[in-house]
Image 1 (cartoon, helix red, strand yellow):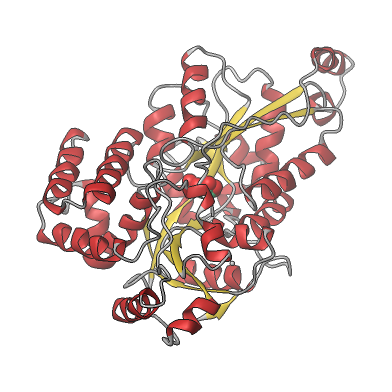
Image 2 (cartoon, rainbow, N blue to C red; image 1 turned 180 degrees about the horizontal axis):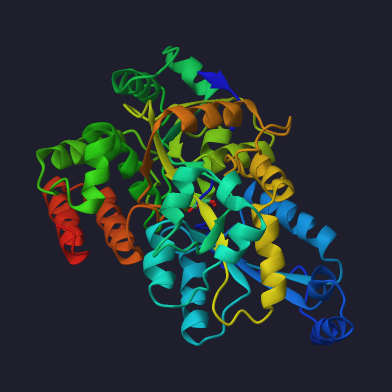
Length: 437
Ligand code: GAL
């Protein structure tokens, strides 16, 4: 294992932060700037910029601020309204609910966090709520600098619809080194090793697996990594396209395996939020957790260094990916500022400011080379280049939102009643309802 560095945005409380208030007065300056024939960047440097995200956890907050800092430097005078909202079911549930209300009422924020893939395309692009931003890919040269696989996934109908700021990996297991040492298992690289470690710790009263499932999401995240390990990369991918049947016996195998792992979870896992579970690993209340590499950002923020990481069982060579992105909603009230924001999101300064703190790797091929990136990230950049890339379902890449919700709910119920047959049936039903099985 290597030394180096979560949080779901599922805090129980609603927290809405306004770092800066929008100012009606400055909106007028845009018009004045335009009339005086000032350079567009100057003209854009006024008014407000309202940004939606669910980044409210340690690591996320600093990373988002790093993007704002780059924006502020280039757009002095524009008030950034940080409308970040924690909590809810799934990734960003509360934010997504407010976003939906706002978009359906044609009152969009200037830009919002959205996962690349089906979440963006099926929820907002197909509904005609986003502007294509090919003009930015051209003016900023992103067609050449952004990772090609990611661009391919991001596009639809031959257009680009958002700017990815990062690539996260979901199939990592994070260990507390002191607790692994207590178990006597030096390197729990295989599932057998993990269970040996888990048994040794159980006899000492220490849970091996930290799970936070007070609302659906984190158990679904755990389970996608088990599906990947049991089905392998290709057949896992097929589950989301209809190429692999949800009646495949390996589904039952996967549920049985997760059921067994749940025997080693923190006993309060049904009452703890996903956003709060990383602290269990940091404080030694649990030995390991499966989560995305925002955990790296969380650990860094908390200055916790006593950890190690491995791909989840049978996940070596498979990179379960997701990407956060920002786009241009139709009718963005401060469109010029939104465009200036998107330029920052795709810029070298933006990506190299954001990612070292977020725990993720950049999308730009010329980024990721500074000393600010840590050992985990250097490893992840190499892995991403060499591995088979598969889409995370829990984080919007593999399937549309309604399917993700049904999937997460099925696994949430399973985490509570541990009924393998009922869960297999619910997952099949969810795929059928999505029109894929
Ligand atoms: C994911 C998101 C990440 C991270 C995580 C926890 O869905 O893509 O950026 O923030 O949720 O909040």
